[in-house]
Image (cartoon, rainbow, N blue to C red; front, side, top):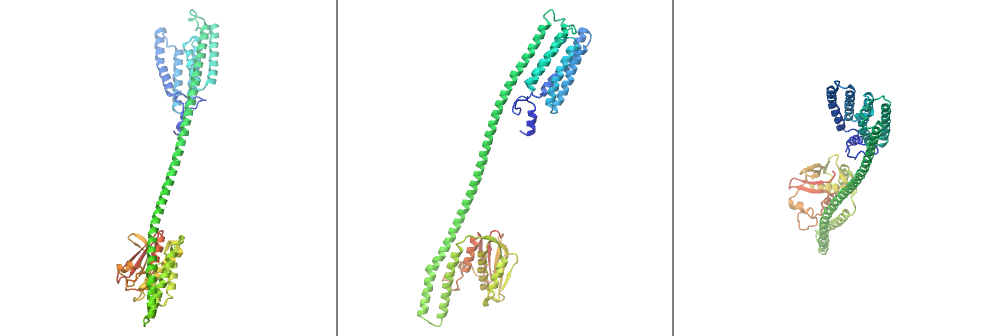
Length: 462
């Protein structure tokens, strides 16, 4: 219920009663009351005129004046009630009826013997119901005082209304009857008023209980919704942790396989090759020794790299890849065999990630690309941003000889000795993939023989 409707309804109930919940629309002057009095007084006007003309030959102006005054006054009350001024309308209705009755009783000469004086009774009842017992008691006292004045006026002959009544009783008996009836009317109004108050109190208590129960239910529902939201969030976090754990387990298995290759294959093979070179020296012994020592150094570096990348938590910041790449290029240009390689780095390259690891990522990729194209005429390495299959990321391209699918696959198995094409060990690409995956990204190699090699890497937040 809106505040406006509550205010309007509250004005319809007597003082002392919680009006918002009391189901009595008559308070404040229900328009049905005004319509009924308007209709009765409108009908009374022609009836009074017709009857008096037929019996006495005159329309009886005092009676017509009283009925007309009641008609006009009630019509005004009706208009006020419809406009929302119910308290004013109720007060005016009681005043019009009471004053019209009093004026008619004196002016018509009938006094308290006039049937109009019985209008005092509904006035007292209506006052007790709407305005309460205090004001109704004041009205009753005023009514009794007016009736006593009429009685005294009739006894002194100032009013002649008693002449037709003398044969059946006395003015005093009539006065006592009217007063007793008025007091009885007030008593009835008092009883009814108190019953309404008790009923209103009961309704208010029940409404308050329902309100408190509703508020408790709403609080419980809000708590349930909050708990449900937290449970959903927890489930999402657990699911994310499960996915991350599965991914880390897959990566750990791959690293374990790589460690296994190092420990079980490459170290023993390198040691055997060293023993053979020492035991059977020839003109190629020095080359063989240098090659095997280089492989062992690469193996040790691989173990250190893989162990280092699995330990610390990522320190994510916004990293300037352009500046990091320039630093790596500056160091590579100091290497004599890479001095003629041209490095092109796009400006404005930024990514979200661990600055230390991203620097290592660029070092591995730029170094691998430079070594791959160093023997080509016009060797060139290009680092920039682009997209692949609709995903935005970064790429590093070299114009080296390129490679087929088998060679691309071997890049991630650097300790495989079955490849006769290349005896070098490139742990850099393995470490680069590990760094990208730790950031939640992906590394893809695109290469064809004679077309060069492009390595795409995608980093979240780039």
